[in-house]
Image (tube, rainbow, N blue to C red; front, side, top):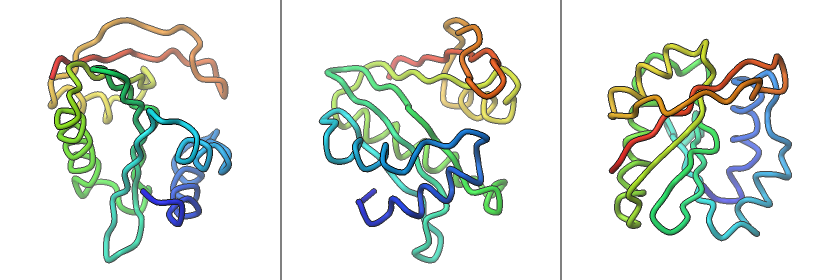
Length: 140
């Protein structure tokens, strides 16, 4: 992801989530957070998805991941997640984690295909509706 992608990423974020991140957060992540790494998925040079991570020493946390609703069901999320996992491994990451809504069974199924397993629940994690988050982990 480049700074030029931020507007497109923000558009995907708005179409994907009830409470998208403010656009300036992406800029801050890319310019001020030395641990942040962001990746985009493109179709015909159009940004249709993104994934953010924080890679610190040998651990990675997925901060957010989304595929534009118009492009879902085409395995783009799977490809993007595989790419991010490969990048994490190439950067010495030994353990990867993320949070996912307990109601998002489609995403949970995908993550479990990559070996992620439940590690706990974060109660009332999501601010829009206080839904719990399922914490998933994998040793790489």
